Image (cartoon, rainbow, N blue to C red; front, side, top):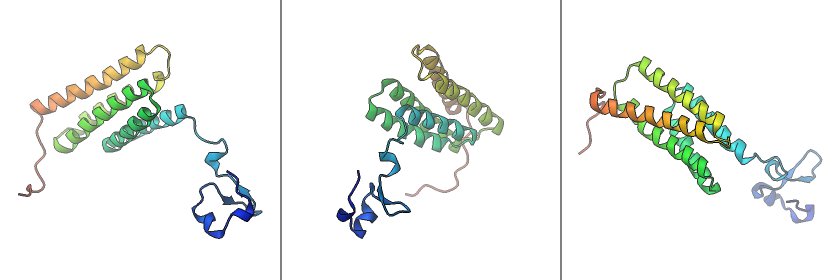
Length: 169
């Protein structure tokens, strides 16, 4: 949106996202409005890559928040495969993160599980845009299966961390 100089007051330059002054004091559009906007496929891929990076750091809460944002994004676009991927990720990370926080888990076991998750996420990244969804669904199945098995194992045999504070009455 281009605004003629006579329409623009100094006040409008502060709140109007489409108006920016360049070095020559000429109006120009903001970057997102002139065709440099990111493609939706690239935006979704970037979120998948972000989850992979967060897994490298062991940041399961970050994976959960990112997958929750992906669910909103995918639902808005009404993209069924992306909704499935996002919902599955959201479910996995909302369940595994709290287990890491509340149960005593050996560091090697954590690293192994996160590595297995990363492999599954990498397969999702590789195959989410394929026409044949077989490999995508296998990767999602492996991720969900590993997470569920870990979850059940923790509930049945895991030792909880000691409480650091007493619950309020």
